[in-house]
Length: 121
Image (cartoon, rainbow, N blue to C red; front, side, top):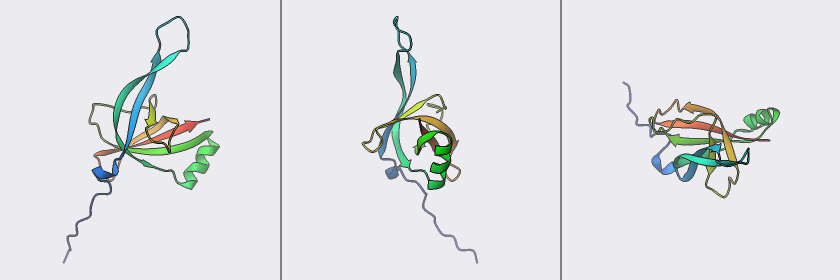
């Protein structure tokens, strides 16, 4: 007989603890070229995962200093992350700003999005 066993979800709302900000740069009005200021697009709570050692070695070969995986709830159309946006992780362990490298839905739970950010050299 088939046994029905409950499997708890891999991620819970209590796992999303670290505030993150998604933004893009826009041209600053004025006579000086190249001056930019950031425009905040979306703010939420996220779970931050590190990258495996094999991925880190591959990232160093591609000229990336560091990578991080940010897991957020799917905003369902209110915000769509692209590789032109940046991530600011509001935590002392992550003082740098990351470029979005890749965005994909979580295959195990469709209510979350996995975002891979890179710190370029």
